[in-house]
Length: 355
Figure 1 (cartoon, rainbow, N blue to C red):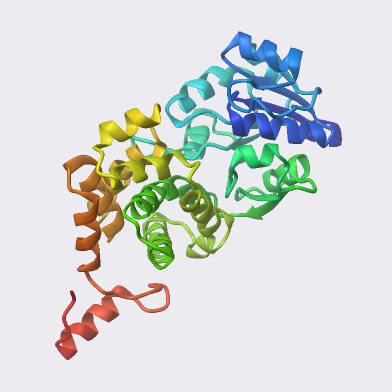
Figure 2: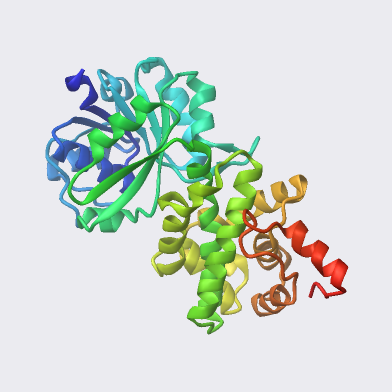
């Protein structure tokens, strides 16, 4: 059993997947990493370096990269799926003939599939029907993990075996793995925080200070938890690493793609100009649209997401939207203590105004 638990497969050749593969190898695992690109696989095997995504990171030489899915998955007890959200289902389908129900399947991808508003672990469930499924989420900038800076993450699963095996495979003296049984909440936290990194970038470009950033992050946390709880998550999840932890790092790092798009918008650029300057699409741009539409459909109050939607897709200037947000409803701070409905009722009874 111990030998099987330390056979790890990583699907994906990006920065986070590469860092996790090397950590598992550092912990004594037999690690195989699947990549589409044969040249990158050859470089990892020859130089123990991923020149495209983590060029300065020395990968543990025990990590073996391959473009052969069957070879990578053969004998693996733990499978980490580190594939971008757009290609996630396609790669899981490609892997499916080589997977079996005893394996632990864990998504490390923070995103939402537009069709059906599906999270990545839901795709794993749909495509495999397997019982051991989990999610890794948290404040995990891959470049800092590669530098072995102290980092923590969450393994979220309602399956105790999944949580324990991931903690054993990846936990080390610089990468701490904490357990949660709220898979849905942890995964939503990872996807939703990208939205609010855009707002943090906008605020910085507009010259707003630390009070403003603190307000934005705190109100973002209220929105994230409100939306996620409506969809079945536990509000307490958002006090942890997958909620406020991930939100802080994404809203504070100028390295974040979403933050940089927001900064460009705050400078007065259009969305097309902001994305062109970045050279790649930031996950949060599409997530804003998906979440805003779903919130409207479900009647969940999300003024920040609505405001960002207006800036990104309706051409409303960032400065004007910031002003409009400040004139909006003054409601409760923490709804799970005092509900918005109670505050609104008090306003009506005392004749207070909502603006």
